[in-house]
Length: 287
Length: 266
Image 1 (cartoon, helix red, strand yellow):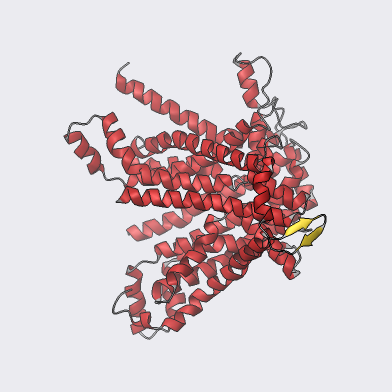
Image 2 (cartoon, each protein chain N blue to C red):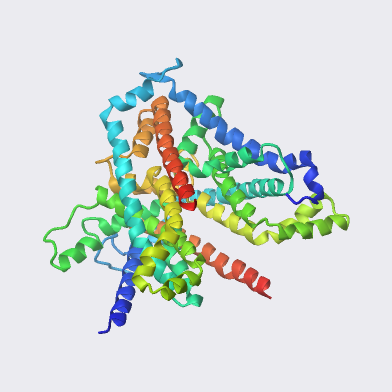
C-alpha cells in the first residue's frame, strides 16, 4: 500500500468490491466442501442414509483392496505421466527458446499448444481413433513389419498414459519455455568465459536455473492428472480403475454419496500433500 | 558430416517428431470427419460432408451446443465481474484478513473439478435444488472466478494508481474511477480472462455431467455419443468444436493482443 494513497484508508468501502467474490466462494465452494466432509462421516446402508457420525468410510478405505488399488493406480499413472511429459517437453521448449529465431518463437509456441484447445472429451476420443485395432498406429507398425497382428492398446494403461502425456507435453512446453526465456543471456556468457562448454553450461547452469519452472509444471501436471476422470475412462476403460473412476462409480451407479465423499477427501489429502512437498522444495531451492 | 550439422539434424528431427505427436490425434479426428463410410478408421474414403449434415440435423446436438454457448458466455461474464471487483478491492483498499481471503478465493484452482462438482451436487441435493443448467452455470462461476481474479490481479500494478489518483483529484468518484479509468486500462487482461473462462466453461465436462439433468451441455452430449463407439459423427462434432476454439484463440492472439502491444509500443 502506498503511504499517501488517499483511498487506502476507506476500509469499509473495499468490502463492496471484494464482498461478492468472497460470498460466492463461501456459498458455492466452502459450504459444499463442509457438506461433503459431513457426508463422508455418514453411512449408506442399503438405500438408507444413516446420519450417525463415524469414521467407518475412511477405515473401510484400507479394508477394500480395490479402493487402495485405485489409489495406487492413480499415483503410478500420475508419476509416469509427469516424468515422461517433462522429459519430452523440456527439449522442445529449449529448442523453441534457443534455436528458433526470436520473431518466430511466439508462432512456434502457439503451434505447439494449439491442440490444447481441442475439447477435452474429444481429445481422448481422438486418441482412441489412433490407437484402436484398425487405427493408424497399428497400420504403421504392421506396414513397417514390426508386428504381425494389431496390438490391443486401447483400454490399457498405455493408452491412458499416452492421452495424458499428449496434453501435458503441451502444457509443460509452455511453462518451461516461459522459464527459459526469462534467463538472462549473461549466465551463458559468464559460463562460457569461465571455460564451460555448451553441454556443461546446460547441465550446471541452465538446467538448475529452470528447475523451479519444471517443479511448477510438474505440480500442475500432478494435480490435473490425478483428479481427472475423462482420460482414464475413455482410454483406459474399465480394466484398471483410477481413484476418480471409483468415485464416479459410487456417485452414478451406486448412489453411495458417503463413500464417494470419503474417497474425494482422500484424493484431496493426496493433492494437498503434493502441494506441501512442492512448496517446501521451492522454498528450499530459493534459500 | 560435422558435429554441428549432426546437431541440427537432431534438433529438426526432434521438433518434427514432437509436433507430429501433438498433431496426430487432431489430424486423425478432422480427416475422418470427412469419411464417407461408417467407421472413422483407415482407409480414408472421402471426402464427404454427410456427417456434418448429420450433426446439424441432430436436434439434441444443436440444442446442447446452444446450451453450452449460453452457459459459457453468461457464467464467464459473472466470473469476470466477480474476479475484477475482488482484484480491484484487494489492490486498492486495506482490508483486515485480506491474506486468508485471497487464499480462499483462489483455492478452487487447486481442487479437482470432480470434487467441486460433487460437493455442489450433495449440497444442492440437501437444499432441495434440482439439477439444471443454472446449477452448471453456478459451478462454472466457481471454477472461473479464481482464474479471472488471478489474471486481473497480476496486471493491476502500481503505475495505474497514479492515473487513478489524477482522476480522483479531478473530481471523479470511486465508481467513476473504477469504471472509467481502471477498467479500460485493464481491458486486455479482462478480455483475456473472459475468453479463457469461456473456453474452460465451454469445454468443461464433469461438473456439467453431475449437475445437469434434461438439458445438457455439448461435452455431456458428446459423451453420450461416445457410447455408440467410434463414429464419424463424433469426429464431425469434435472438429466443429476444435475449429471454434482455435478461432477464438487466434482472434485473441492476432487481434486483441497484437493491437494492444502495438499501441503500447507506439
